[in-house]
Image 1 (tube, rainbow over the protein chains, first blue to last red):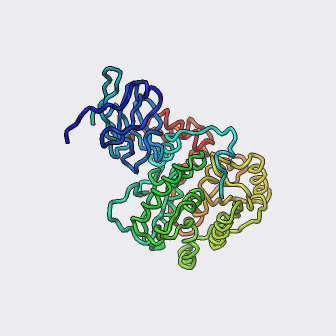
Image 2: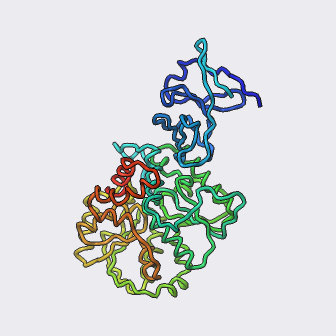
Image 3: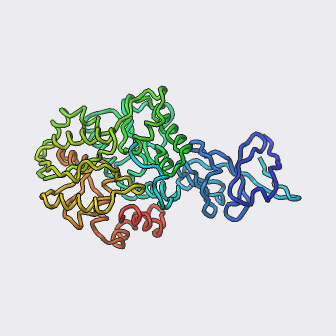
Length: 101
Length: 322
């Protein structure tokens, strides 16, 4: 499948916390993690936990259901060696946030 | 209902998901026997026998408890699969925190995971798990769910034949009578204890008939109630305080230092009578009564597994040195 940049909102919309959005056919979460605007799959690869409710500690995102922990600086790798979280590139242009999905 | 909802906890400080789940996950890995195994996610298509032993998630801080359950089931030649870890949480933590929707998600995920193994029965060790699953179990979950003690009472004749080593101890039986389910657990656990050769059960009114749960950290038994319970046990010459749940064990273990009354999980006495070997690292670390010494004992293994000493110290302090 060809990846494409999809506009998901303005930077101001993602200034606080984690926000769930639709980007094309993908449901994603956007927010500042590890000091950068990041985007990742909205559902935990373990059991579909709602990752917009994750705890964030540095670059680590922790699922609220069973605490699978994903390092977004490590391309979404799970810290216990479980399945990784799909992470998407982001960019800001002309006060718009784009996600590559 | 066996425990109070978060809205009744007053100024209780909410722990993070990371702490709640990572603490037992880490302590389980550091303190469990090498032959203690379980599935977090069983392979697709696995039919794990008639029984699923469910051992999520806080019980991993006191992993000799699920280990004993496994070893006794094995000795009874019962066919079972163990499913556990935070991955199979019942949702009770979320319920305690007032996050009812997430409790529902977790309970349904676990109940469905059990169903995929096509068991006849699912056994849980934890009263909070029993309560969460009871709230969400549906007709499509065709198995019977029950506290693990019931299976042992059902096989009491075989168990009695295996309990050939007298356990010469004077014991008090710590019971919870805060709801019908806990009263039923208490009754069958007492039946098990009374079946152990050599055991003398001493009637201790303050130990039994507790009208509140020992549900650490949400609603721990009040300090004065606990003191009275152990003072009574000591006065009556009790050697062991037998507890029904891992939460009671965690909270009360330290009282041995003050009262000389040892806290025993009930299956430990069954195991002793059967001659099953086991260690109690939680108790060993707590009886050191020295956090630094406890950490020093655990750190070599923590380093091997790549855990930070700071994190492990926090987990030992907050789970064992309570």
